[in-house]
Length: 92
Image (cartoon, rainbow, N blue to C red; front, side):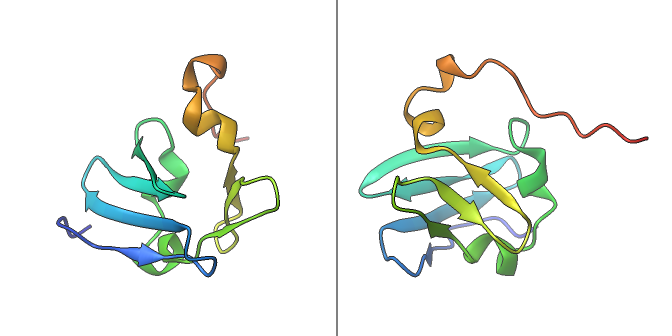
């Protein structure tokens, strides 16, 4: 993936992805910035820039990437210590 400063705005214009790098990117939600590392969210690493740029949010502020079928609860961004379990993609 190319690194550098890339900005995407969601349809709501309250969500931006900035500073896409090899290890993750920054997500700005209603003016608050969060760092999302691919090591914590490996399903986002596999997404291309087109899929990452298609971001939506619902009435409660949860973030959704509909093209890749992935969502993050708004509370997880603000309080990651409350969510110690990590997603594992188990192959059968």
